[in-house]
Length: 166
View (cartoon, rainbow, N blue to C red):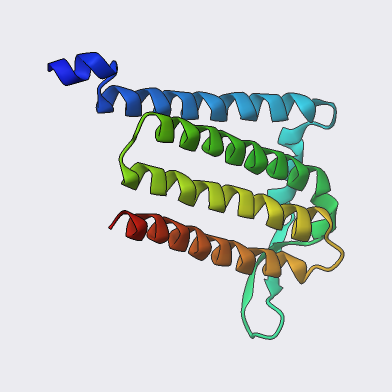
């Protein structure tokens, strides 16, 4: 370790390893808390019911059939758990971005974290809008189109951060 690393504490590799540990540990904590919150109704049974209900359904306006639950509105509790997971993961990503800024992490890492924030918070918005409040089966496919849109927006957000560095 050189003198500059000693002055600043942790090396870049150790900082990244610590952030990875925090992130992975947070995911396990989030999963456990959500499972416990939904324990009275057995979240695991809800997951099994969801996958058991998948059938091929026509995508409106196309001749394509894709997997969809036979009754999407029957899985509100599972969608609520997914919403809770994505919103919590978005919050963890925000905390990690703050740490990355304070630790002067490389811009590429900050851009990646911003991409994750846009994706997880955007996904949480789509879940609450199109799945939890679902009234039409066609909204199932609108949700997945929205996921593709959010993924594109997340990539664009990352690109803007990387461009701003230049």
